Image 1 (spheres, rainbow, N blue to C red):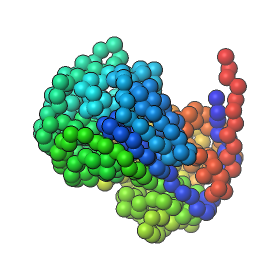
Image 2 (image 1 turned 90 degrees about the horizontal axis):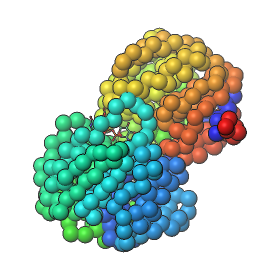
Image 3 (image 1 turned 45 degrees about the vertical axis):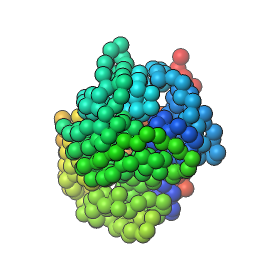
Image 4 (image 1 turned 180 degrees about the vertical axis):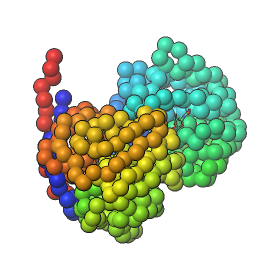
Length: 423
Ligand code: UD1
């Protein structure tokens, strides 16, 4: 098993280039199943979740050619299987997108119940509700979901909860359905807009993505024949913005969309940092201890839950006592127990955490409990005094491309070490 060994403290300085968005890529890849043709996808992040998505598509009959490590050509003319391999789909959350795309393409989908980060209960009732509204019969049994429909027919879907995954799944299932589908109370995250843009580029007719009402006029076929570049990763960019603040550094974050990061910028300004926005880059610098803040996670354009642990590392060393309220996931404070091993003073209970800021963290052995927790602990290791050993980094590799290299280029002292398995 690999671990990261970090020696701090380091003030991060320099430039970093943001990769394509993980959460857009893991939706766009299954969306290719709706295309009866060939397309190219550029700016794909080179991460393990993308590699796993590609393996699943290949098992379903897609032919994938890697042009570079960030670009593929995918031929989905001969989809021959509607059963996604259970051992693969159960490993990550975004496998639920295979439901919408397989039923849209083939009228039948069999997918293992999705795995992914352990952030608490992760129900999929809104996904099922959307598929049923479109005319599918959905069964959950023996660890898998089966959806079948002779014909999907456009309809009105009201989401009881703002859900990224259910919104995208409803879009996927509706693209080739007969007639018009309207999704009300849709999620508005940048990657929803990106998936809609991708599908429209391939011939779909989706309007309103990025607002809370999305209309999909069903089309007969998606032909492909063109290329699409994945949107820059909002969460990766936000991670580096917060790393600049935590380390009292100065980072130019290139290839990002500043507008997607407005609420992170606002919070950084509030706690005393400096942010300069350019067309497709952001410079973040900090020259003092951050001040305390109150953070509440919300669906986009609110403060993203996927940056909550990273701002937790910032507020752990802030002047004064901060509070974080997590309103999306019930178990997203596991990282605080690890930060406390490094000298932080955080009390987490239920959906809230109180962070009594300390002057300095100290290196310790810590465990990444999930993807973004891993990013938070990496930032903590960089700003802590002494050596931090960060374990379970396979979580980080799921969603961040070349993470230690990117941080090393900013001056961090990080080594990846492979330890022999105990067994
Ligand atoms: C996506 C992101 C994840 C991010 C989350 C919230 C991907 C692959 N993952 O996850 O990184 O943390 O959005 O921004 O894009 N819910 C239900 N029923 C459902 C679906 C969701 O009750 O059918 C609840 C969830 O428990 C959660 C909330 O709705 O409390 C939001 O979840 P959702 O937006 O669906 O998250 P994901 O799409 O799984």
